[in-house]
View (cartoon, one colour):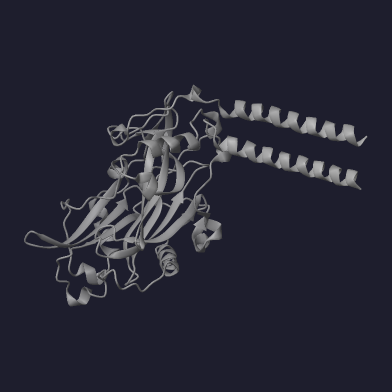
Length: 402
C-alpha cells in the first residue's frame, strides 16, 4: 500500500516539476532581450467583442490615410513615409466643414482661415494633406468660442472636430444647453458615453477596420478646459503587432458628461506597414520597459504611475525629418487624480538600436544586445536542462518500481 502511495507522490512531483518548467519557459521568453511576435500582447478588446462590431468592416474607410512605406535603412531600421497627393483644394471643402458644425453654434461663429492661436491636433507629417477650418467667436481681444474642423484633403472626409469654450465668456442663452457644464453635475455613465460614441460613428457613416481594438472609456478632464469633465472613448488600430504613431493610431472621442455632446473627435489613422517582427533583431518589451522606467524625469514616477499597455509603434525617428520613421517601444501609464485618470506614454525607445529617439526628455542609457543572451539561445539552454531533469526523474522512478 505504502509503495503505491510513494509511486503516486513521485508521479505527482514529476507533473509539478514539468508544469513549473513550462511556466519558466514562458517567463524566460517574456524576459528575453529579443522581441518575438508571439510574446507581444495587444492592448484592449477585439472590435468583434464590443458594441462597435456593428460598424466593423473589411473595407478601408476613406477617412484613413493610405500610406506607402519604403525601407531606407536596415541598420538602424528606418522607413520612409509617402502619402498620396491631395485631391481637393482648401476652398472647396469650406462648406463641408461648416455643415458639420451644430446650426445653433454656427449662428455665433465666423469662419477665419488665418486663426492660429489654438494648438492644432494634427501632427506635422500629415499637415500637407489635412485642412483645418476654424470658426471663431471673439470680441476685441477675447476669444470666446472656437470650433475647429479637420478634413482629409485626399478623400474629403472629416477626420477631426474640436470645441474650445472660454471660461470667462458670458454664454448666450440659446447656447446654454450646448455648453459644457460644471464638473459637479455628472449625468451620463461610461456605458452611455460608449454608446453615444458608437451612435455618432454610425450616424456619420464611419466604419472601423477589423484591425482595430477598443481600448477604454474613462472619465477625464476636458482636453481644452480643465473646469469641465468628459469621457474619452479610445480605439486603436494595428497591423500584425505594430501600431502607428500615437497621434495617428485610431479614433478618440470626448463626450461632455452633462450634455452628452461630443466636444472633440479625431479619426486620425495612417496605415502601418506589414512587417515581420521576427525577421528583425529588435529589443524586447521587458528590456525597453526597464529602460523607460529607469530614465523618466518625473518625481516619484514609479510610485504614482500605474503601467497600462505597451505598444510597438511606427514612430518618427526625428522631429526634424517628418517622413523618416523607426520601430519603437512606448509604454502607456495612468495616474489617478481623485475620480479622474490621466494617461500618457513614456519610452519611444528605438527597438532596433536600444537608444532613445528623443533623448532630451530622458537620462542617457542605452541597451547592448550582447548584455544578456538572446531568446533562442536561452530557450534552447532551458529546454536542455528541463528535458534532462525530467528524463532523470522518470528513469529513477522506473528503476525503483521494477
